[in-house]
Each structure stands twice: as structure tokens, then as C-alpha cells.
Image (cartoon, rainbow, N blue to C red; front, side):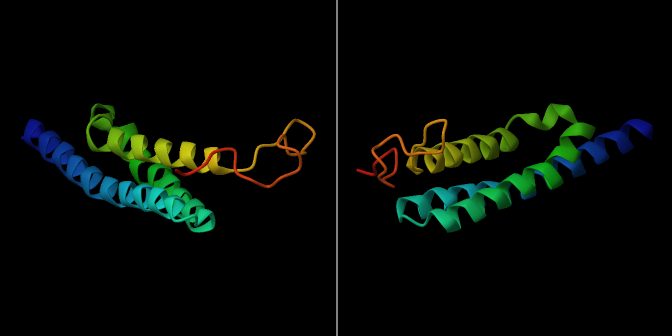
Length: 113
């Protein structure tokens, strides 16, 4: 009976993780799409939403069941990192004193082709 309870509990955690990962991954993907449209403010809001999903909803599950780290969770993290890298790449470059490295221009450091 104890083994069945443990298996059922792990299965419930796995199902909750998979369903919650979908929300985080969707937010990160939509952030990337927003960046493609030039909407950095909305993208940052969506990336923050993904980050909160990971910290508040997914990490407690992984602390209890670390073996669930692969699969859906790694997909969320991959999408989040891709979004944050793209967001950062599009931001104006600045040197250590707070001034822009590109001659005072507020152009992004990267360019959408």
C-alpha cells in the first residue's frame, strides 16, 4: 500500500508539473513573438510571468521530486533562456559608466533581419 501511495503521489506531481510547464512555456514563447514584433515591454512582462511560474509553481515540485527535472521542465527553461537572450540582445548597449557604447544612440545592440 505504501508503494502504491508513493507511485500515485509521484504521478500526481508529474501531471501537475506537465500542465504547469505548458503555462510557463507558452508565456516564454509569446515573449519571443512579442520581441519579433518589437514589443519589448510586453515581452518583459511575459518573461517575468514565466520566471514566476518556474519559481513559485515548478521549483517546489522539483524540490520534492528532482527526477522530474528533465522533459517538460527543461523545455520551459530552454524557451525562457532563449527569450531572455533575445530580449537582452535587442537592448541598447551600455558601457560601465552608463553611457551607450554606440555613440549615444539608443539603437539595439542586435538587429532583427
